Length: 223
Image (tube, rainbow, N blue to C red):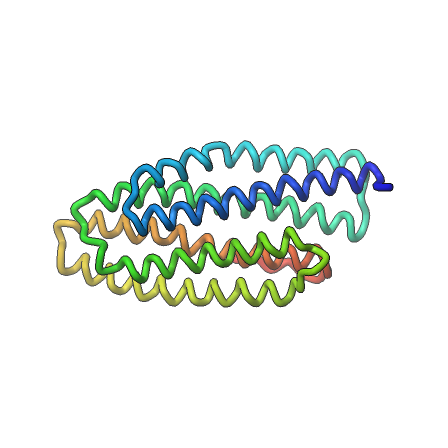
């Protein structure tokens, strides 16, 4: 029979899993929206993530109450610290996906020609989705997951994401030089794409936190 503490931890895990699932689904929908230049789907992403901050606050409150009520020690304390930091990373990813959807919807109807960049943007976005999917699968299969292997897989996606962003950054900067009258628009596009880059960085942080919760050691987060 589960103790009250175990029940509380399971509740927190379920809420984090739901939040992670919502963000992953929204990121996939945002990818599809860009692929099809579908404004309605972009709007759906914004709607689906409209209360992301409140959901994060709800999880944080549950974690803080667990600290206060049960005075966890050692491994239990490590899990709660990891979950608290994990929620923060997830909310920031979710907010980034929401902003990306809003901005890309605007970019696709602006005077900028982003078609030449589309294949690279799709690959960039796909890597951010893949990183979240690896985390979600591992989080939901905690008994079967190899946390070190999962961390390495997310790290590979992040490395690929960095390379793709560097290529896109160079190509877009060249466009700024060639089309000075649209320079602000292209700078804004670059800023929107950076949301995908940061999403992958934060996914690495989450994979690291999951490994820390299971094995201990040091927490190493991207800044």
